[in-house]
Length: 515
Image (tube, rainbow, N blue to C red; front, top):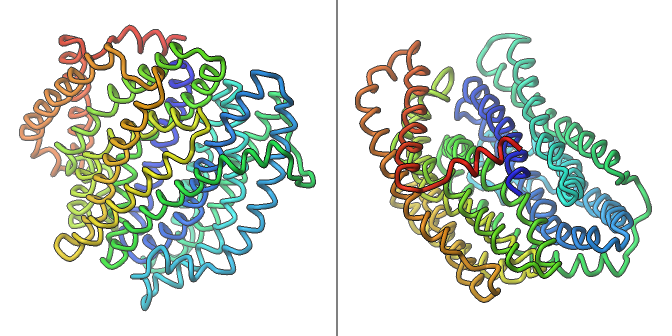
């Protein structure tokens, strides 16, 4: 399991780093202006439904069923082909409807856009890029097939292609044509919109070839409703509703932000930063843990399931708690160094840094959700996470809307963070009823407090280092060196303190990396 985690994590790291490069270019060319906000809203639409259909409802139901069919030899190939055909039919229809009703979707996402140029731009970009949902959802299904057979490489590497396409598109648009800022922004925006479906096709092609080589050549065929697909639909329905609640949480945040010029861009850039550890750790663990738990619990290996769950939770917190502390302690130097250039000014930096600190407080919660949810999905229980998601929706909406008149767009970030912790509490409490496999063991309980102590010690070291290195961040040629020094200080202090007090065993990580 650890080997799979590091395979997924390493490629996710590459993807997130390239995502940083992409967003650095977007910030430089578009800043937090209307074209940037319109594109970010348009791109978030297919991404939102991707999480809703593919990575959420469908995959959470498909992977456990497919994994069990692999274990028993009960025609996994036929099941995968039928699911593939059904998804093509459903999502092709949905894509066409989405393009037709794009003005209503943009209104649902960002009603604050009405009355200015952002609305028309978002509709145009949305119609161009909405077909991405078809390609990426099919890619997600194929990734589920590969992950269930313990072939993690291609599925983890696929997102890299999307960011490569984005970066190439920005460079192409930015380096050709007139240099007038308004014209350049329009050119970059429309080029990015067309890059969305191109990137989706590239991702789908990669995982399709990998699945075919693994013996699962999924092709076009007439969709049919089999007993297995009926069971899949019954399990997926609550997961779809839960995914819908999660996406409504995101909608609430964007609606709040849409009433403040630049706020959608600020929250997006902050989101990009905390998504780095979330993607590398949380998503990697979730991808590997679900099929692992499904196989072990299907074989009635309760002890093995408990060990897999606890080691995943331990690894997640070991790598994300220090990241969360760093985002809270040094958000301004991080944002200023990575994004402040071109159209992205000091005011944008300050707003993004505050949002990043708030998101940082919720980072461990976002990661723990990825560890706790497979406990339910592996048992084909998608109803409980739906009920918990409803509670988190109420928490998020109440805080985001209630606090908006007092603290503006930051209410959206606070709502997201608090709702994340509410979801973790509910998942952990519900997991106690699921038997021994869902219980935290003594090793986890010993290490969690030591991980927290080591992270706080690292935070103190970072704060002192920031005071000393502060003047260097005002020098264009030295700010990158100063940030690199801060990163090394953070890593070094966390390693020294953590190993001294027994927060983690480096031998476990080293052994997994070596394998």
